[in-house]
Length: 155
Ligand SMILES: [Zn+2]
Image (cartoon, rainbow, N blue to C red; front, side, top):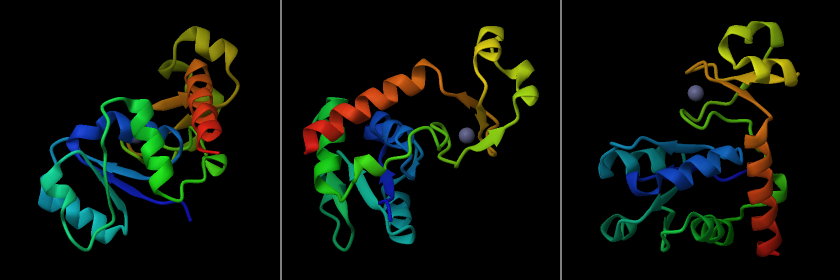
């Protein structure tokens, strides 16, 4: 099974990209340390943190994120977890609230997406929680590209 993550407030961008790859990442920018560790326990998740104090907690799986650069952060996570990037399922999860996306029939999103997008895309997905609409446009291209680059490096 794919690992799950809990991310602290200092690695929000990393959290978002892991979600873009399809991983389950619990992230709330204002969560306290006690809440983060409780979530990590509850969900049997790996805690991603840049906080040296938090990183010393016992009894949890923790990755102390060393770098500032997103690319390096992603690589570190890929190296320190059994993260099989070839099994990643990009664009299956809401980037904002982490929910799994569900298919949205094309005609139902007409008023919710730019006319150009509606005219050029056939498949849409929707977040059941925040109702955001997703589609495989340029965004998906960027995600696939980064994923391929990371997977290539990890080998
Ligand atoms: Zn959402």
